[in-house]
Image 1: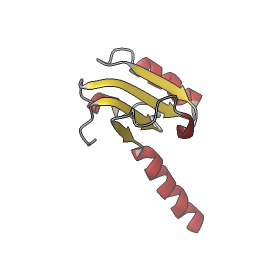
Image 2: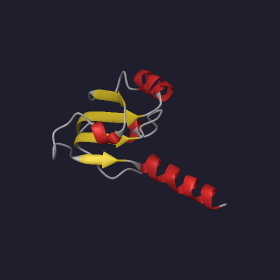
Image 3: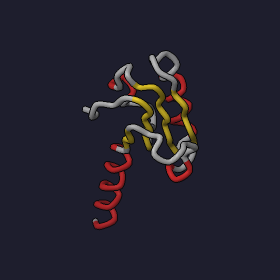
Image 4: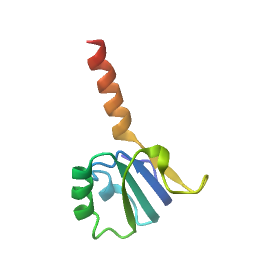
Length: 92
């Protein structure tokens, strides 16, 4: 379960938008960032009818086109999980 979100939200590693159904309508705008164009294509289809605007960006999180301190919530759950799995795999 995601912590309560409202206002402007950035989700890093949005992938195929598994979290979007759990976001409340109190979100003013969702920015989804992912490096996979294929997953973002799926995300575009799945976010057509959500009750808030969604901007999907094919880029790294370091280059988000937002002003400093303008985001109310940031999620990166799947990035953290992926990094942990990668680290375990490297250790063998």
